Length: 59
Image (cartoon, rainbow, N blue to C red; front, side, top):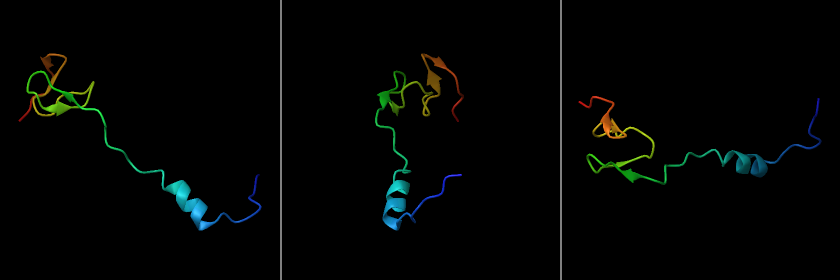
């Protein structure tokens, strides 16, 4: 089994762990029915339509 020769420093460990941040979706399209911003290839959360037909019943 491979064993590290030296202890990895806090700086190296923390800089490696710093890349686990989440990112927000950068692209948003306009819904053709309600004209609200929505993610591409997803159901519109405000009106519940996808590809021109109602998929979800929105309360």
